Amino acid sequence: MKLCFVVMGYGKKTEYETGRTLDLNATYETIIEPAVTSRGLRCVRADEVMQSGLIDVQMYDMLLRADLVIADISTGNVNAVYELGVRHALRPNSTIVMSEDKGKLYFDLNHISTFRYAHFGEDILAREAKRAVQDLGELIEAVMAAQAVDSPVYTFLPKLQRPRMTDEKFEELIEEAEAAQQKLSYHMREGERLMGQSKHHLASIEFAAARDMKPGEPDILQKLALSTYKAGVPSKIAALRAGMEVLQPLNPENSNDPETVGIAGAIAKRIWLLEQDRASLDAAIAFYRRGFEVKRDYYNGENLALCFEFRAQIQTVETEKVFDFMCARKIREAIVRILLPALESPDFIERRDKRWVYATLANCYFATDDAVQGNAFELQFRGAASAAWEIETYETGKNDLLAIEPARNAALAPAQEHV
Image (cartoon, rainbow, N blue to C red; front, top):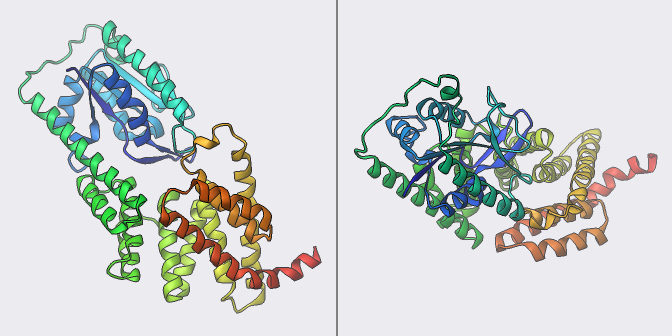
């Protein structure tokens, strides 16, 4: 079988110029791999032949010898762009460039024909995936048949001769890469399946195995941190500290990734709930604030509001107490303004996070004493939730809100009367 070598990022990556986060695994799994295999090619992803994140001899072998290379340069991933440049230097033809349609084309790539596809938030909706698989498959077929020059290097240097090399060990290299790809995918799928069954400790073992294969990969570290702290072993506080330790390679104190700071905030918040130390609560507020202010991420925003209210209850100065409660209210009002328009989108029903949108809106309305709307969104959340731990997480947050209600109303009543 002919080989397609795919160069792209792994997991969730942020395009820092626009602040958008894309799930590149979704791109590979729902568009690239199905399109490639539907045309009878073997599909190998570049990160499976990399050792410790460094481009080595195996990577160059693949870039030279692969019958087709697909390079997804969404989010301006520097490795993908570099590997695309190497491919253009080594082969005159059979290279396809891809990019998410709202992303910027970096370097001198605007003149190169690029296959475009669309993300909806972090995810790719089923309709778009179906369209993109069909269109990309047709493009692959056309490129493989035409064998036309698509490298700018060979376009502008038409007399340049492409390098040649023997077939020795190339098949073995491909098989090793395919095996690594399957092994990593297995650990990630098993981890996610076990998380869905609330078997967090077993999930953490799978994610740890994936981490050992790809050290430093944000998507894997985030899932490992989440499953580690939720496992609660050998004790709740030990699990929380272990989860925070897992996150440290991602530098959560300075990160703008909403998933990283959201998990760090959740850990710090739970440490405060167990130990009642002000430093952990302030840390949780700092983490959640980064996620909400930088990305307007609703999960971070909801938890930021709750942590402000936790802090309000331990403030010794009345004006500070009122300030924290008022901040929480303004944040929730902003979240409602962000999320309500999303419900009107015809694509909303396909969103993988719709259950959390419902949960967040329910809590926002409960916190502003609108029980009718709160109950309506809670019913929608319960209908969309897929795991027991999700319902448990929601109920814990709701109970915290209701417990704070008397203090919240007492603090804000004078301000409301003044208005």
